[in-house]
Length: 305
Image (cartoon, rainbow, N blue to C red):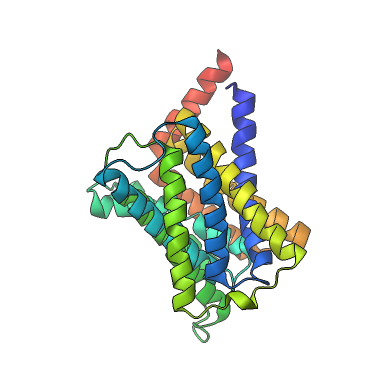
């Protein structure tokens, strides 16, 4: 893969995942949140599993470690993450949700420090502070209205980011040869089943779904384009460039979500929310400064050679 193709795929993936926040916002007009998320990942999981079936003979979990990884990824990174994301997006626009979710790499580093014993430097601590300051700027809590829909929505989406980050850290100690596509397929299907159960438990009504062309289009787009297709691009980039560079995609998503939200829904974020996003990115840069420095050196080397 040459550099231009890699950059193009990187930008495409950021655009696709950013667009998912807008598609969720549109689809929530027609679907209850948990069943909406469940239907998306049932479909995406079947597609990715089909790809695993034709591309590897390791298409299903083979041992207890594989099953444990599926349970963690499906329970936290698919089920828990998307349950809170979809519920939270009933209260805040997709662009705002994307900014809060971009705190994920900061939270991952925080959990790695507390759970796995990773070392925390003073600059790393400052990075955490900047990250949480950014979320505060996005939420803009009013002491007289702490339970306003915006604050509640940001809080719920923050829990979604916590679920994903916790899942990412809890899977790290386990070593397995299971291919990423196989793990992701079964995690999607397991997470979808949990979301479905959650929808039933909270009395969501499938009968209340409005199967309009817009509803079907948003679900199909989320399952196939920003779901299955985007994850296949992600697997390719992850295998070639590693997690630090892939984490940077999380900071393209809010930009993409903001532009698409403005283009399709007429929504714009306010300046303070934009400052909050910058603060979150600064936090990430401080925590991952060594890896980012190595990345810059590598890019310069490739450009000069």
